[in-house]
Each structure stands twice: as C-alpha cells, then as structure tokens.
Length: 220
Image 1 (cartoon, rainbow, N blue to C red):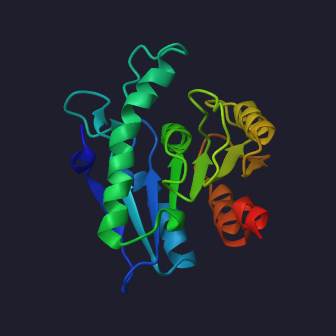
Image 2 (image 1 turned 180 degrees about the vertical axis):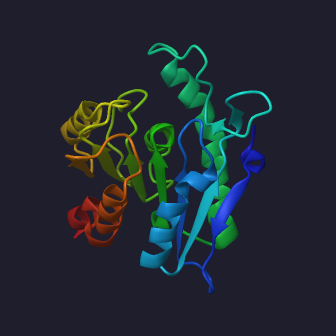
C-alpha cells in the first residue's frame, strides 16, 4: 500500500488553493460520507482544497464499503499495531497532496470521523507538524500519546450520547493531552450520538476560525 493507492473525491477552489483539508471517513463508509463536512468547509474557507480519500481496506470482498485498517477480530491488544501500520501510507498521501497544491504543513488540516478520527490522531502522534490541525470527530486514540505534539493543534468533538465510542474516551484523551501540555480543545454535544452531526461540524469550523494555535502565543 502506498500514497497512490488512494482513490479520492475532491472539492477544489476556482483559484490556487491556500489551505488543504484531508477528510477521512469511518469504517464501513466511503469518501462520500464526508461530503457534508467538505461542503461546509468549502463555504467557510473559499480558498481551500478539500480531498477525501477512500479507505484502502475492503470490509467485505466485492463490496464498496471501505476501512483504514482491518477490523476482523480487532482487540484492544492488536488495535494500536493495526493503526500504526496504516499511518505511513496516509502520511505519504498527505505529503503528496501538499506538494501537489504547494501547501505548507501548517496550512493543512486533517479531519476524521470515528475510525477516520483514530487515524488522524495516530498520524498526529507519529508525525507531529505534518498537519497544523487535527479535527477528531467521535473517534478514540488507539494508544494514548506519550508526548505532546508541538506543531499540531488537536480538536476533539464528540456526542455525549454516543453509544459506539463513549464520550468519556474523548474526555480522557483531552485530559491526557492537557497533562502533556498539548494544544487541544474538547467539545462534547449533550444531545448528539455517534454521528457527524451538523452542530459538531459547525463547532469544528468555529474552532478553525477562532482558535489561535498555542505555539504562536508561546513564541510571541
């Protein structure tokens, strides 16, 4: 598996892009599942290139549903290893898109829902600064980070009523990040379950538009 293995959907601006967004769908889904978020981002950031890759792992032979890493007989023990193996080709893909559009790492954001969020968090942990922002919707860490990312801001967004990935995992992740001194936010929506809900998407855009990365304040 390599960067060229990914099929993509794209929303591109009329002029040369100044930001890059990469959006990762959940297991059992497709790039089209991220279109509502892509549309909102496109409306909010008119000069952004938005790329939605398809997961490279098939859920079932001959079916269209995709995933980022195998979930067959997935356990707490093998989860981190499976995620770690899927990170290098995703990192290569992001670098390829940055070079394609001439976009800086700091002007790149990576967003994911559920399994896609787990991938985004893992990539941030392994490749600090490859993207400037991570938006993790309703997805947990596969393994807790042991150091704070110095060059990436993390935004955790979750539904309080999520029965697939309990909201406490987002809260625990945020606590871990804070203990490490990371630049992170955590938004829990009280009446939302396991879904890429419009309220969470709107809050994500608000975070992007209003949160100045902590590293800029520290260097001032």
